[in-house]
Length: 343
Image (cartoon, helix red, strand yellow):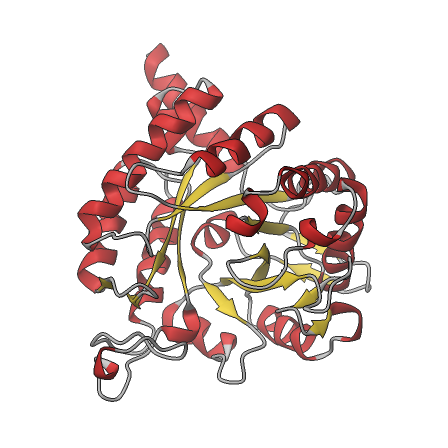
């Protein structure tokens, strides 16, 4: 009975980490005066990435109606391409002047959905590289939280940041400040994957987050663009990542899994790997069996079939380059979210 109680306790802790904006996590007011009725925590755990300012970006309300997926991760908030500690969408569109993304969020919330914001990404300039301190970085992030009433954020920390100790300190330090100043703020950290987990730079991020006392709901591995072939290779990488989390945080294997996420790439990757619905289905089973904390992918913009379906074996930013029905990959996340609500 004691062992069963401990397991139930772990489930409660893992789920509570995803509850945004306490004390009333389901309904809160943004600093614009908007009252936000938020979906339950499980939907943020499966929120797919969408390059929100892309001219061909899907209508999020239509995706919600078609798939049931209620939350989406808006990508990416970055510093301007010209430099400076100012938040922009994609390095080009200043958050301070934005009306387009604000309308997308407002319309989605009117249909019962919500968004998270992802900071960084593989391209462009992360704010942690341009801001001169954790405080300055946090202030830039806070402008995004305040404008859109966001209570769940993702730090997508890739090589440009991870090879720069000052930038890591800025990003992790900023997130820690934000959690202190925004009670209930949910944070995930997303890192590039290798065949055995994360590389030495990624481990440095884990150590910095641990030492800063950052409360991370999910450390999310990106097992693609690294000679991964099919789900089996991705699952081996996740298993290696589990060992790294255990080493750095002193967790049991089960605790580590409950803090682990996967961010996949649907269809053809940049380096020519191919991930089909078969791979997503296998990873979904794996994620459920291991009680993982997050199941997402890059990107919703590509969750549709090309013409021809294989796109002549070329990468596309607007379709997957594999045979599929519309939003087929998103539906695996919907399945994960429904499962997460029951555990």
